[in-house]
Length: 353
Image 1 (tube, helix red, strand yellow):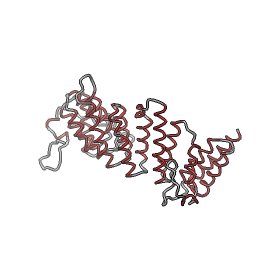
Image 2 (image 1 turned 30 degrees about the vertical axis):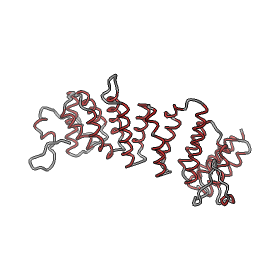
Image 3 (image 1 turned 90 degrees about the horizontal axis):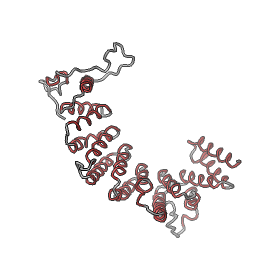
């Protein structure tokens, strides 16, 4: 970031000390208010910069020095929405090279990945670069480069919501089959590293059953994908039976395919009890893999899933559901006892009806 050094070289000069800013009239935040009810106390540097920013906004100036000013403000406060918006407006007014702006913001995004405005600014830049009949950049190459950049950011924090949201926006915005193609291998690598990465499971569902599912042209192809994903998630559950993310993914598959939860009762059953006789069974069922030998059983998530399966079936199956919820409430998940008691009450009332 460019700045003007003071004579003592103690840091950048305040804008009120810079000769090239004497033509701007700063506007204090509480202009005309002698005693604000709840004043916010800022550092001298931030107060000075934002006072001059309000002066710039009032005159409507768009210039190189405005880019310098907004850059200093967002470095001090990455969530300053107005500074981001005015910066983007200035970039367009100056016909500035937006590729350079993207590179300038790369490190900034890594260091401030949990700030929504950082990613919104990138969305605006990417959209403008690839829009129009003669885009300033090749859309596919730009999108591919952004996916690689996002992957580097996720290496720092694999579960950051804003970064994942931006990745999903990028895929949906360009909606190129070649871009979608690389997502499942990417997510699989993440789940190999951390099977409990809920963000990766959510993204997998987005790719397979959300916007990325357009490639499933026929019901038969859709059924094949559902079967593939069911086998995949069961394998992950066998490795980590207490991973709620994987059980929720299984729920999502069944909901999408309009398949009863009870269709997976045989698979879920071994996960709801302590070690059983079949643990020593040499028979391997690829469709219903058994818990790993070091699994901590019974699994609360499995008990919850199987209880819901029984509850949805109705009739006498509700009794089985109630028994599982009682076990959760009184023994295996007492922290959520009130929740499980609610599920019992709800199921019994529905059974009466």
